[in-house]
Image (cartoon, rainbow, N blue to C red; front, side, top):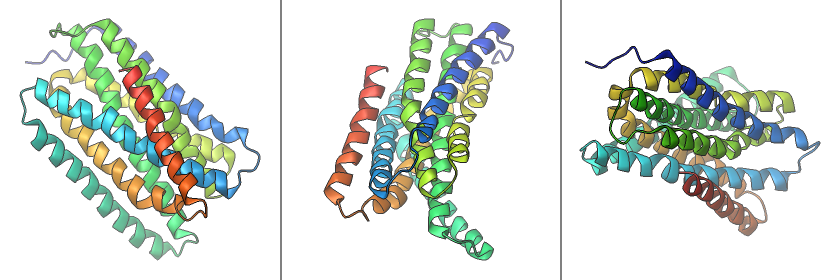
Length: 266
């Protein structure tokens, strides 16, 4: 039976580690305060950059660890990851339809912009859940004496996740600012997208064995959701800019930045 009563010091370690990752998300969201007035070209570029970050994170932060994790657990990795990815995409498709129906009833102005904002926040928040779980599992595995688990690897995982969270916080706050939301609200919502990490981290530590078994599915589920938002909302919006080639360059740049952060600190 799983020992649910892990030493309390481990929970403190997990809480501190995930609060750090959330703090870096908050720092990324604070970028919105450095622009008094952002023109449409910059905002479109930021949408493209956000799309690149999300696509890159979908593989390097989510799908690749899901495949490796499933293999380590003796699972059929291609089946688990494919199923999770499809479920994540389908979940966002259904959410898309729900947002359309809900907002049309409200007769809200700028329905498209509000829906894009909601889906962006939702997908990145969803992406932060398995990251928090992964940190909790890493520290909890040490306490339970699981083979190959060590403090250095757990700390480096938390640092890596934290560094990746900086562009993700920006990826939420700047698009919100584009929809004429105030800087303060854009910052707050960007920061709140990462608040799930401490919660998920503690949960992952508490249920370390069980979470370890379902983590590959959660990781790939989040990847499918992020790809859907990037392809259906962010890229099409950035392509409405007359400088399409430049916007494509920002998509590539976002991908490379996230890849370098993930690979260098993994």
